[in-house]
Length: 323
Image 1 (tube, one colour):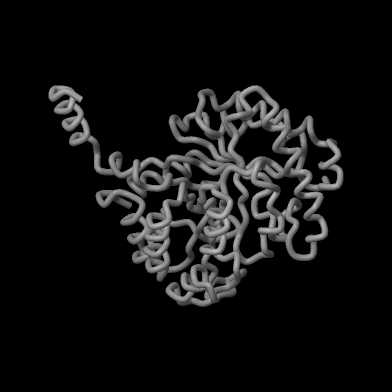
Image 2 (image 1 turned 90 degrees about the vertical axis):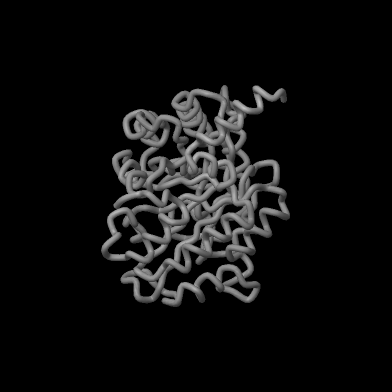
């Protein structure tokens, strides 16, 4: 590089905003905002920066709603600009079965959705799909954890067929498939559909202290909660570090597909998550900024949870951001 060009390059780098320079070294940051662009924008205004990705959910009640991504991609997120959509796509919907899916009964539904997603995301960038996310639980129609583990062989066969259907459409080579399991459920590793059918290993992490109304069950101590997720003697062999090791054994990038904290004393948990993301070169992380199913919303809780919200903005936003 000659001196004039080098000088221009150095000047350009100097003029970049600090957050822009940092993005090259940070994991991608995403948000779930309940399929609402105004909620995404409110989160960004609070955080003081744009997110890289937006997690959105495909309908799982009716095939006619499932088949088309236009509502999500155009009506809801038509003004997303450079933000990329990550799609939660159940392999089967309510009332369907993996036993039928593996035979090809739903191939046309899958292809229709795949074509719709590609057409609504022009360009050449990768499009991340989370097929049957949290499959190792037992709370969604597509789950095969808990008492449903006898369905795992059909799930694997269906995943492989689903993968082929998505890849078969024009532009299907852009899809990247995340094996997105969750903590607090069955061991997901026996559900692995095969190295050729997965591009990313994702994991969902939610601290659920006992003091939380409803589904809270674990320690109220954030230090202990983090230790349980990262220690070899923690909750189980497929805790956070267990699934990181699993991803590494498969030579797949690892990412936090969803995570959330609850309560006024989550600053320690947030600090440890930020350090974990950096130390392990995690590809991306998506925060659950919602009270739907889990009360993790942060952007309206500065007065209620000051330590928690300050820690999140310190680690993932701009220091100059204002509530």
